[in-house]
Length: 144
Image (cartoon, rainbow, N blue to C red; front, top):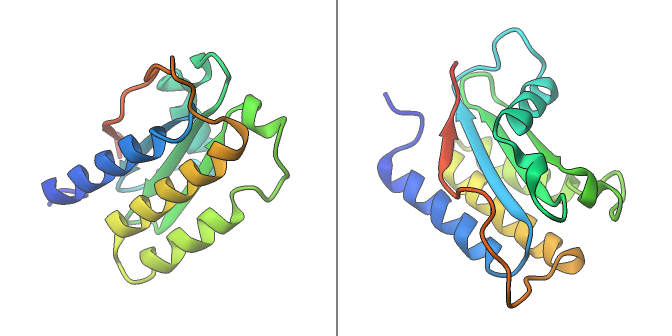
């Protein structure tokens, strides 16, 4: 069984495109079944590095990581974001996502989180006329 249906994948990718239309921030989503032996933040950080999310010009990449079977997820922002926002910047996004995840609606939770991330990033990293898409918008499916 696929972790997300084709239709759900299209919804998530579309949400990334819409969010990135209002911010210069770059959003990536990683979905896998299990975090394996690592903790969720460590696993998300490893994917952040693997996907070279630290290479954006403004260091404003955001990774949303979801391990479906383990019921765990994390949001990690790059240093450019961390320098400008408070420690609990992602808490409202996490809470909104969690409400969907508790109902088993993983695509809905991802879409809500992506939308919220775009709105929040727009305050600090508005989209400029010459903005280019620095990272792919597709979902990365992990190894576990």
